[in-house]
Image (cartoon, rainbow, N blue to C red; front, top):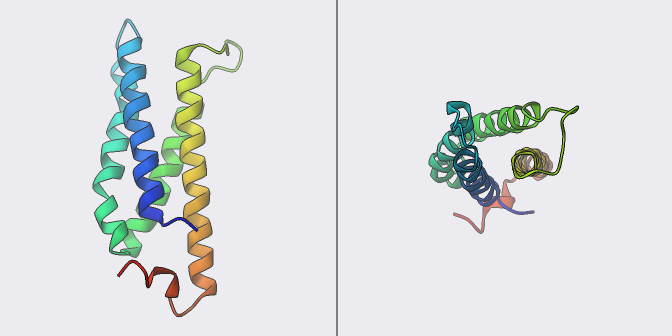
Length: 124
């Protein structure tokens, strides 16, 4: 299982890069398009504390990542969906966030099953 801070870093970079591309590719440059890069920066700021296995930060990052995925998917209009750059980037950011949440939950379940917390022994 991949460690949560690695998944968090990858997801944050996807949100940051794809969100920035989405913002600059839209001619009107709406402020709502800066939501994904902002969430990416917040998630990158939490990476250090995830590496130190802070449970509160882990739960907060899981909730924030799930919220980011829902926000990205809700911005896609189903009746006007086309494989344009905007829709593909929103879909990429949403799927990346959902996959990250799945890895977070998988790591949490695996750690609960191994009560001695040996899953993180190679990290410390």
